[in-house]
Image (cartoon, rainbow, N blue to C red; front, side):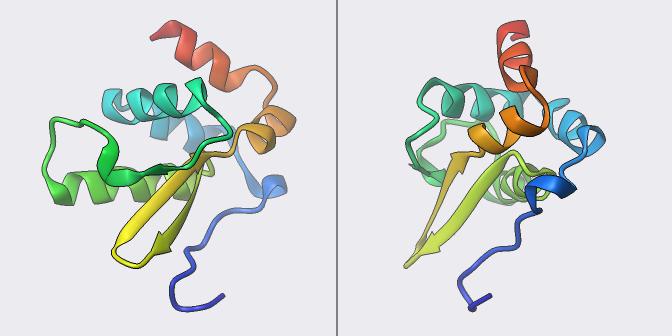
Length: 103
């Protein structure tokens, strides 16, 4: 892993407990809902309109990444993320759709 690469759990290491804990937060659910609307797109983390400060945003991104919900990558001064839609669907079929539908 190079200096700009972030650690992500492997698909076979994804566990439902950490995923559900990550999704317990309303702001993180909103991010996942927005990402799930366009699962093949990557978004700049700063593009999400969350009513929290920078340090809270950073923590939200880390929780989502460590739970295995998103892939993130650093590009220059920007951090990009995309939903791990295929990985999540393979490991936990229907989970993301159910959470997004529940609001």
